[in-house]
Length: 110
Image (tube, rainbow, N blue to C red):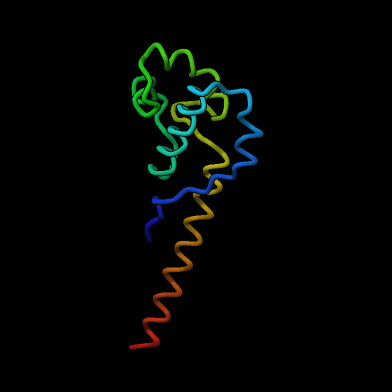
């Protein structure tokens, strides 16, 4: 089954508590990376050129915001975000449960 990617939960209180120290540019880059992560359904490649494009930053801007933004990720060959991973798993489970309920209901009708 697929996973819904047209919505992403954003817990405003948690987000603001964790990111109060970010500049407006860092906020923008971080949110764009979170959205790309969600749409991809998992980790992003740790590639500065790709990450700068996702964050809509020049190379220079990316170099400036990178330390603050990547502090929210486990950094290796890929960027892993624990909270997004948990939310993706939860959304996938909920989606699959809805699909199964619809399948059972349709089978009963026919």
